[in-house]
Every structure is written in C-alpha cells, then in structure tokens.
Image (cartoon, rainbow, N blue to C red; front, side, top):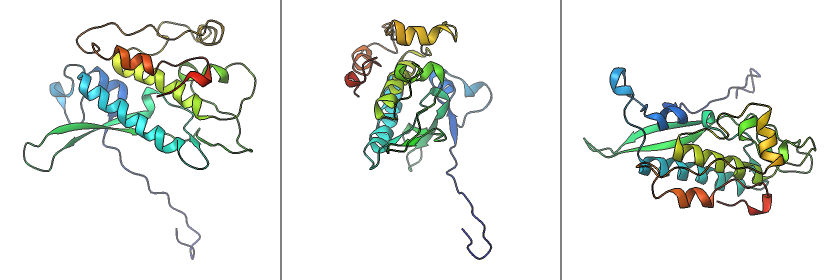
Length: 204
C-alpha cells in the first residue's frame, strides 16, 4: 500500500498446480505432452490431499471469530507437486484451498452462506436463512473426501432440480465407494467423514 499515492495492491501467492479433479484422474503438475496424464493418483497421494484440506479447515475453524470457507468443491482445490531438495528427491503432493469469495466470519452480523448446489449442506437449501457455521464446511468436506477417494462427484447423474430433493427430503448421501485397488482400505475413512444431514453428527 502506498499511502502517499493512495494506491492499494493485493499480492497473492502463485499456485503452480492442477485442479483437484485433474489430479485425481491422473493429470500431474509439471508434466507436458503424453506424460501429463498417467494412472489415477495413488491411495497414499489422495490421503495426503484429504489431510491437507482438513488441516486448512482446522485452521479456519479455530480462528476467533471462526472463518467458514463456504464453497468447498473440487474446482476450488489445486494440487502442487513438490520435490525434496536433493537430486532425485522424493516427490509429494500438496493441496491449496482457493477462492474465499463466499467465506464468512462467524459474527452476529454475518450474512447467510451461499455456495455451489451440488456441494452445499442441506440446511442451506431449505429457503430458511441460517447463520454461517463450520458444520456447513464439514458437510462439503465429506463430499470432497468422497470425490477424492472415488473420483465420482457427489450425486453424479442427478439433475439440478433433483439434488435438493435428495439432500433435504431423503437425507441422502452419495453411494459408498466401491472397493477397488485405489479405494480399498479407505472405506472406513470415508464412513467417518460422511456428510450427515444432522449438523450435530458431522465431524472429521
């Protein structure tokens, strides 16, 4: 900020990675041409990404006042590739949570949350204004964990009009992941983060 010139600049971190959906399907950062797409991300790499996102939420939800992201979804997560400092060092992946345009500070004057229909908590779809709460992020996180483990977006195949019905009327959750070579051993983790219609039963 230059007070003398009355100029304000906003400096943002450059995220050198790929969208979460591309990463899950096998597109890796810093690769080009035929090498850009390989086999789907390994189970261990997916677990690291889930852990990174959860750590971000723990930080946001531990602030005073609490910060609610309000729009957790696959396109708002980018994955960077990192390598150890030594030649041939180990490669690992790191998630970055983006787009805080719909985030809220949980205060008395906070306006209700928005979000993206397929990823929103059911209490936000009833037409009744509810104050922002971390529980809404936890619901979306459960859907995001489901997507990372299975590669399937929540309520895939359901029409835009049908999604609110599934979430509110039937209290539905996405189908449990099938046990294949990528998701085997992670069904229990998915179960513990299943998005629940009851806000008091959401945890991570």
